[in-house]
Image (cartoon, rainbow, N blue to C red; front, side):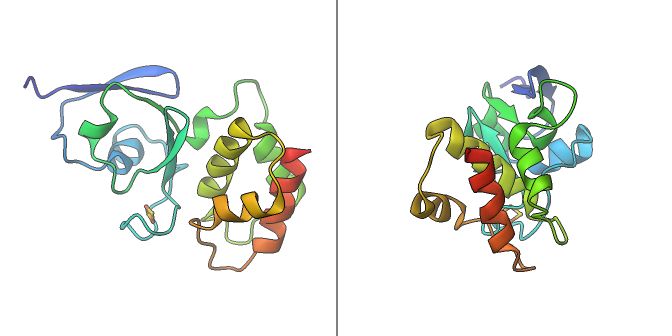
Length: 152
Ligand code: FES
């Protein structure tokens, strides 16, 4: 193996000459300076580090670089294609869904993936989808409002 692993990050091809076992989150934050994905638990349990891999939410803290090889990774920074915020980001701002804000990267990217699959999810589906994303401030009510607003 050549030792170089290529993938696409926010629409740009990126090559890493790093071991395939390195967690994608380390590379995004430390090598690429993309700090949207947060380091929370580091164990795949809180969702703070969520990125989209081929449009599906994934936990970058436990995602080995080798698994991301050749895939299309989208981080929070890659969401908005025009100047200004992505509509889901704007809905979270409008609903004032942040307290400390640490969980919002995962909440927003998970919502983006949900709405791509189902533009008008029901309450149960929204709750099920976000249930793996932990918010320790307890702003779940505002977060749910934001998701409903984004789904309108
Ligand atoms: Fe990755 Fe918690 S930091 S799931």
